[in-house]
Image 1 (cartoon, rainbow over the protein chains, first blue to last red):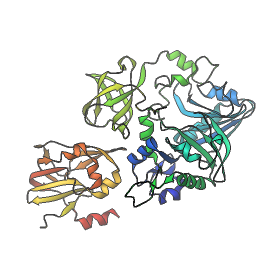
Image 2 (tube, rainbow over the protein chains, first blue to last red):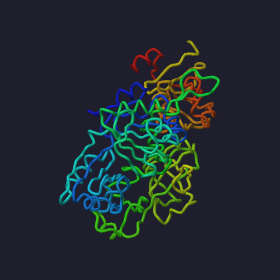
Image 3 (tube, rainbow over the protein chains, first blue to last red):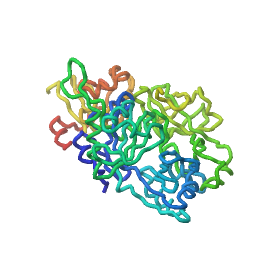
Image 4 (cartoon, rainbow over the protein chains, first blue to last red):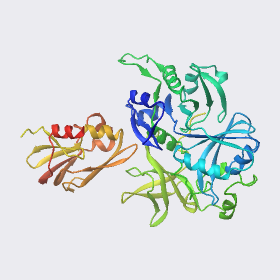
Length: 373
Length: 122
């Protein structure tokens, strides 16, 4: 039986089409549809309920030591209020999960993990913590919203002073009141747009959700409007996936898993081989230069490549797609693929096998979409 | 026989007979609603044979691909080429957006009336 987030009723009222995902019933889309929701995030703003994400806390004298051993990125020089992205590897160098590390204090870290991996991660971390550290899974007590899009800051500024918002990407502020609810606000997201992720209590989240939708509402100054128009619309899991794909952000279970190393999937920037030991470091060292890499594919023929389509150059199989769809903003079919590193040059003409049919495609640079700064 | 009548398969295709042996085929409004925004439709070619109960096309939404089954056996007389560039026409009017026109129909599956189709949806 799937769990409901505290916003379940709000989703139904907004016309959410509810589907089971990672143990929760969540909206895959609202009446607006995936394309409109995707475009709202690119053009104005979208609001997502991502309360299914997992949150764990590592606190105590040895908290940093444990974080450093668990994740591949270097968290030793983080400052309070900073967020860092990192894979977390197993002993073989495969990925247990990718996550965000929030440094609240030198000895107090909040770690946000993928919903689908929460229980696995909790077990993994429990098994591997050493020394004086308190570990807690607080996922069930926290709700999480993602407010994403070029108007995100403007909308939040209707509910709080700009100085209360984290100014830089990958920073956060705690105990910020939004509509009377205490929130942690971080300038992070999974859409390729500017935006914020907002943590608050389960009790307060409906209030914050409604306040954000209200703050983002406007009446369009057009001649023919018969209903209220919105700058902001609620967005579902469907748009979350198309947005992250268009921005070429990897998703666990697609671009990486326990068999794929972060170096093989283009996450080398978050693997610091020169830091002291971390789980998986030896395996990554032994494996040496990766033999496969993650590339972008622009489908030049007719069709859409989804995940797990084989990629060929002539008769030679060079790899497989890991995610793919028609991307609404760029308005064409795109895919990410893991391919032989020797066949990964940008401009390479390949073929993707879609349900028995070969469709031409070209290897293109990632990300597909990058917002204007 | 009401020539405008739409008949249905449980798998959400509609068929509209233009005469005894010619018909147009599309997908129901319920199907387009369930699929969401369509972004690609893969159609067969004029002259191809379709077989009752077998897949003849597929429709892709942002999220997934779904097969479309033929209610009849026959030869494709025409395809709706507008759908190749504007798959969203199916979302805006599923009963106007026919996929293919089939002639020389020799065989058809058991078809549901609109009322029967609606009743089994709920």
